[in-house]
Length: 195
Image 1: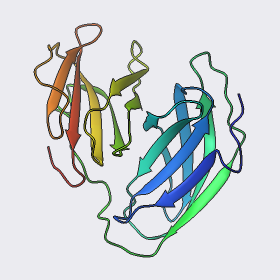
Image 2: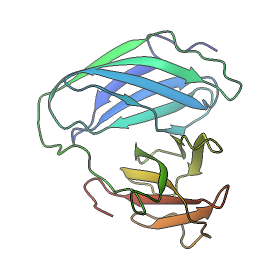
Image 3: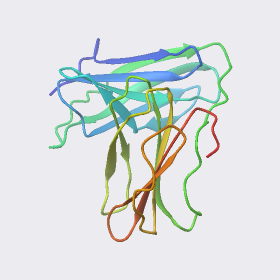
Image 4: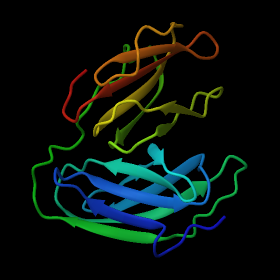
């Protein structure tokens, strides 16, 4: 599997100064990583998915500044580990400045209870969201999206075990039993929410 340099890897800005980075592939990817350089430096790895053949994998970015952002596709691997990334690059320039950057919920539990946490921006066409988590027993979490709106999702593994306490709705918390008596907290919110 190979991701196209021309149509398979693109970046664009939204009206509210979010950046959408899209990776198209012939199958559902298990792991996607995009390096960001330019106005800010970071790595994006939480993504939402939609469609089939091609499947569009969207990584959302909420920058805290304006300027030119460069993106390089570092990983585009399927479940078997076949990596189609070939160093594809794209970029986008933000000139408005309404984004406050970093909006969304805060991780669940206290700092001492958190094992791992990952955050992603979801868009209204998202069908599922995949977030990387490094706990030794859980490497990533994929959840179905029923929040048909642009917002955020934050997944945190905590030391306590929990049962499901709520449905997937915007601005609610869902707690799951996962492995080794750990709890998985999934929080949905709109950009700027402080859950």
